[in-house]
Length: 444
Image (cartoon, rainbow, N blue to C red; front, side):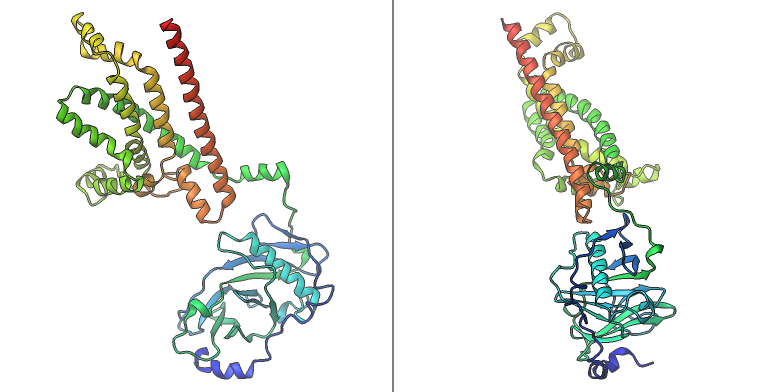
């Protein structure tokens, strides 16, 4: 079978008439602004009073230049299992919309109103499907065709190409290059939809105001919140115990050893979180002895929920350690020595004297460490990954929602983090004022 690439030059000469440049878009009917109601799922739309509606909308962001089941059809997009799909090829300098003859009873390419309504449908659905990759500009020129082969934008484009019961739109360069550069020749993307009877699509108007906000809240996956709270809750227990223990024990070491351990315990605070995550990955990964041991006992660490706790603990631990260490060092050494002369053990001095006297500093350090663990991103992503409902915390959700174009969801989680941070700072300020008043009364 002769492929399209072998006859593209001939087709370019024979089919220069095939493109219909929007036959009547200049008249009043075509220039009207249509109120398009888009479904909640973004796959269907309806214009009140129109002769047709659309359904099954999808955006093919990328095609393929590979052969399709052994058939060379050039650069192609899959358009579905039916030859009746409407295809809008979006180029940087224009849109070519193919409306098959089989749907002319509902949407005729020679009718200006039908073309204008199709343009409104595609533009509205395309905007709803925008996930950060852009949508069709309002002022871009449109062309319509019902011919299965057309020449446009330097390409010979063939619609409804049947490949083993699967239909594609294929394209080759009009000048028959042997090795075309598809990064510049191909469309930016393709919008694909189906024309249907108006009564076959039930689309309700989108909610507004508080109703829209309620629907937005109802549609959010709240698992990042629960993962974050669970992770931070477990991490802060570890941070509290380890921070107090490390601060107390380092004070009992010789000065030279204190400097070494103090550096080790503090270094996660000055390293970028991604570096901490990478180091943890090198130490606990599946190819390490420690990581393999945990796998052998049926408790793999990497890319699991415990990894989120480990990452949050390591990154937030220095805040607890440094604050507790400073609070303990500020205590009067003579008072501690006096307690020892009374026969108090070191543990009794620690729990009955040191902790009560430094409790305000310990509480503030705990809250700060909690806030740091709550906002941990880099180390968690490296060590635990991004698994919805398992390791996706709020900071990770913000990043990936934004990358996916779900800006509203990313803003929602950002507001949640801001509220948590506000509450933490407010708590510290209130606590500090309370302890300050207590000290003043005591001094008086």
